[in-house]
Image 1 (cartoon, one colour):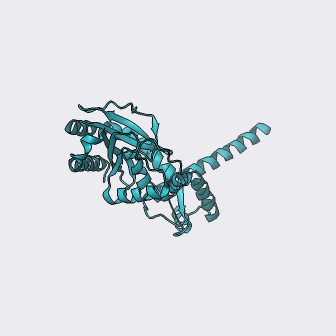
Image 2: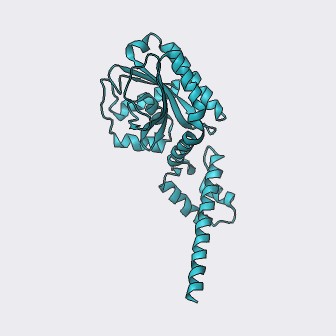
Image 3: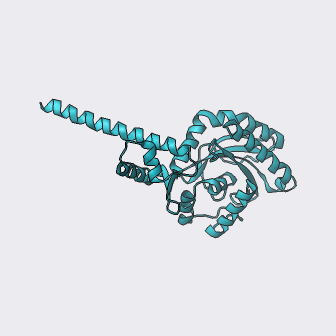
Length: 264
């Protein structure tokens, strides 16, 4: 009888776990279709037979794990930074890098400069692909190695376009270490930079990561209009200044073409 009872309890626990997981994915699916977010009551109505108290507890757990973000002003839940980062990694592994590679090669050939494709991993930028140009400066910037957000062109894109909750956590840490003559080292100056990036949809690192090196990048968006990656060029500062309008236009155009692949 003990064996039967144990099996019964195990089955009940497994059923409960499966039910929780199903509800979790249902909530994510619901919120992915409502970019402005939904209140607890609205989510509970979508789930129908699930008690509101159970929905609330699950939402709080998802918020704690950064799967969701709760806006205390509007009282709505949205997809959180953790899920956005996860979607970026999935996109990288299965679709983004192979699809973007030809355009990465094209922009490198047209400019003669090193071209990079990068995503956000936690609070770092990771380059997932790189094409060396004909005028490559041979920087030791490896694919797959985490790099700082605050001093790289692609990194600053994520500071500008990721959810406010995530941005605030980065600013609160305020660990903007100077690595070159123009590195941004204060939250106040970074917020000014973020405003410029949002206005221009272009990010520039002018000797902020490495002295003498100029980087420029534009965001790649997914179907939901969220940043999924960034594409950028790296070159000596002296080569960038005279060609800046041409380079800006080319980077923006290439980023738009890659975004279009994903339904934008």
